[in-house]
Length: 81
Image (spheres, rainbow, N blue to C red):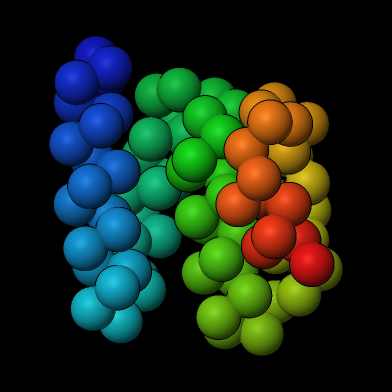
């Protein structure tokens, strides 16, 4: 998956996420991670889905992974709070 394709995939997944289509968004985030392991945005957004469905331990772990990769992303820290 090229960087342009990853960007397009994130955009598509976020649109699904915002529309409440969590299964579709999760699938795309996981596809991104399969192609680009440790992609911080995909980890963070997948963590938000985990939070949305009540999987707090999973959400915390994913967001912490994103923070470890990109510690300067303030919104990752906000999500952890």
